[in-house]
Structures are given as structure tokens and as C-alpha cells.
Image (cartoon, rainbow, N blue to C red; front, side):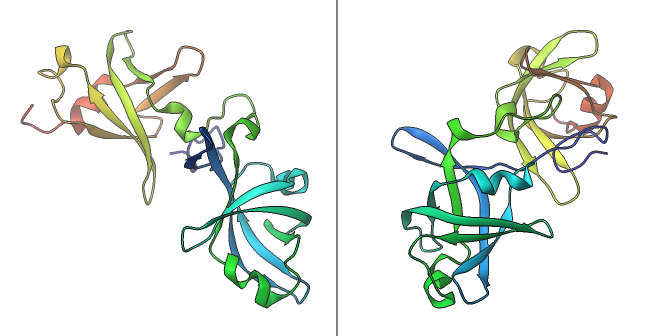
Length: 204
């Protein structure tokens, strides 16, 4: 079994696609939590593999809990016990940052950090083809879902193999017994055929 997104021999990060604005994609880099201290700092849960990422952030968009989106400038950022302490320009007291609690801090997808070798963002894997160990191309990854105990690929089988597998989409767990390889360059994953068949309903 693997971590949040990957096989046990790999680590993954969380970076969720949040919204489309100004004709470009935005991603969430952290989720704001609660005020910290009396000078306007707010704690945030990072959603990135690089804990020091906050120190290079400057101009960001914050989607507040009521859905409103505001553009803010970071004045200061610190890391403490895997939590970010952020200070936004113009927010100088706990009362001021109260409106940001539970908000999402977003940046353009173009500013997303490249990942170390062998790691992937979940949304990158959508649309990957599904291959079996013998090289057969049998379907497509519709999305990767984060379940309680494991992440899983939502797979739709091609019409030509639905009688062999299923006409319904299935969730294939991201574990070594099921997913044996991921090719970023080839844009496909390799799955154990027998394991996939065991996940398919009896009614094809």
C-alpha cells in the first residue's frame, strides 16, 4: 500500500485543482485555519510537498468560506511544526484575519512546483490510458479519488473489452498488487489484469 497518492516506495503531495479564473487554472497551495497571535498571522495547512513553498509566495488569491475571491499580498511566512504561519498585507489583528478562516490560498497552475522524479499530481493522471502487463490498451483513467484508506483510479474500460471486464466504471486501488507501473512520458498506467477482473461486477 502507498501513501496519499503513491506506491509505498514513493511519496506524494496534495495539490488540488480549485477553479478556473482569467482563463487559466488555479490550484490550492494551503487551507487557512485560525488566527495565530495578535499581529495578524493566520495558521495554514500546506497542500504541497515543499514546506518552504510559503516563503516564495507573494501575490495570491484567497477563496473565502462564503465563496468570495480576493487578491492578497503575503508580507511574511513562517514554518512551524509542518504548519504555515502567514501574514497578509492589511490584516494586522486576529479580528481582521477572522474573515479568512477556512479559506483556500490559490496560485496559477503555471506556478506549481515541479515534482521530484517518480512523483505526480493527482490531476495529471486523469486521461492516462490503462494497460495490462502484456501491453494491451484496455481503458482510461477518468480521475483519481482520495478514499479513506487508499487512493483509487476510476477506470472506464473501452467498448471492445467491456465483455471481458465491465461496461461500468470501477475503482482500482492504488496498491502494488493492482497498479504495477506508471509512465508519465507514455501517459499510461499498468494494472494487473486478474486484479482488475476481480473488481468487476458479475454483470458485465
